[in-house]
Amino acid sequence: MVVRTKGARCRNRAIFIRKFPKNKKENMAASTTSSFPTSQEGVATSSQQNLDAITDDDFEYVDEEFVLSHSAEQQAQPEPMIPDLFKQPSLVKDDLITATSQLQDQTVEHCLPFLTGEDGPLDLNDYGLPKLNRDKHIKFLKQSLGPLPGRFVAVDASRPWYLYWCLSGLTMMGEDVSSYRDSVIETARTMQNESGGFGGGHGQTSHLATTYAVILAIALVGGEEAYDVIDKKAMWKWLCSLKQPDGGFQVCVGGEEDIRGAYIAAVIITLLDLPLDLTPESPAYDGRSNLLTGLAEYVRSCQTFEGGISSQPNNEAHGAYAFCALACLAILDNPRRIIPSYLDVPRLVSWLSYRQYAPEGGFSGRTNKLVDGCYSHWAGGCFPLIEASLSPSGPGSEKHKTATGLAAAPESLYSREGLIRYILCCCQDQTKRGGLRDKPYKMSDPYHTNYVLSGLSSAQHQWDLDSDPLPLPNGDTTPSLAAVGADSVWNVFPYIDENDQIYEDSDRVRPIHPAYAIPQKNVNAIRAYFQGRSGFASTLGEE
Image (cartoon, rainbow, N blue to C red):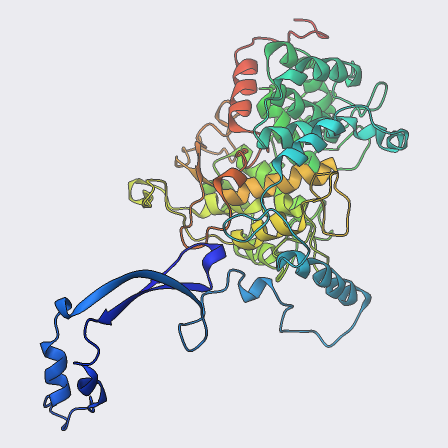
């Protein structure tokens, strides 16, 4: 009898329990007699009769076990722990050699030793992959929130982003960031302008990107004192000055109009419960339009012939802009209704699918570009929104349960396994520095640490809509602010695929909202606070 052992370390071993006849001499004759039947009808031979006469009492169990190294003759080869897809270069090659193709080949060469485990001794999980080095990454992010070397003066305008990246990464790894509340409050106050919005630092021009980072950092630390830092009235007036007649938003007064502005404006308007009315000074004011008028149409105008989304109409498609477009639409209305209404979803899925590479498993941001860990979020984070827009609804759409009682995983539109392999194998800085990175030969930084963890969180969880779109009033194409996202009830579950599990529960990070990119409880808390306030009272504004 063969007992095969389980576990990565025992894949090539077999344990045998031996049986021996009690009297070898008595059975010697039987063993030398031919055991083949004399006819095709299966007439028993004398040897067969002897075997039939033997019972279990004629055998004794030897209570010994011995371990044999397996060979092809002894047992079938075990299924490899690493699928071939992720351990060898693509078999299909383009004969045209360019600088781009050469750089791609070099990137594969750099990644393969990490993907196949040849890069040196690492702390591996039971599935043969490196564990998430949580302690090192937490230490790296906490250090990044402290005093930085003098050379960082070059990125002074990115201080709000450092707050968000570090606080978000720490939150996903289970850290309580409320202890940073006072520091965030003092820092944010110096960045806010009386004209509305936040700049990159004291005295710097307000910009939607830095405003987004500050508001999300405030939402992460939470608390009324932190929320009260935001001058809601000035923020509303400033956003009105950025609203354009074609439906989009400039990122700063007199600045460029692009898809980032559309997404960030949707985030700010809904988190702070801003009025939709436009001020008479707004470039988009015509007496009929509001802050949301034409916004979905502007998003639609940014979809390219490839299927991806560009920063502006007629520009090149990019993974980060695809996320901005999908998240903006998902905030404006129920994804089941709005995403298929304004985007060519099949072409978008096709374009996004081509952004995931093998053998690396990670995503690139554009056509003919290299994989980069940050696109684990920007490109990989698009799929929960698309899958939600395509998911069935109604009472017949209940999920099947696994043996654990958790929701069974539906088939994904991308390879979660490939992305998780790239993140755990290639994106972790295994030196004492810690943090996560673009790819193996790059240095870790807070930006990549946050967005790689965001991609890991997305791959480890399943987001589902638990509601159908509510009907809109006649003639309306987008909901009013009171209804924006109100019928989009999101539920999140651990993604369980019992056939392709490649990480341990200790390597799981916390989920974040697929559109707001912070935990859902933080989204609910800041929205509830501002919805419960009347007027525009704030620390800088007046009632």
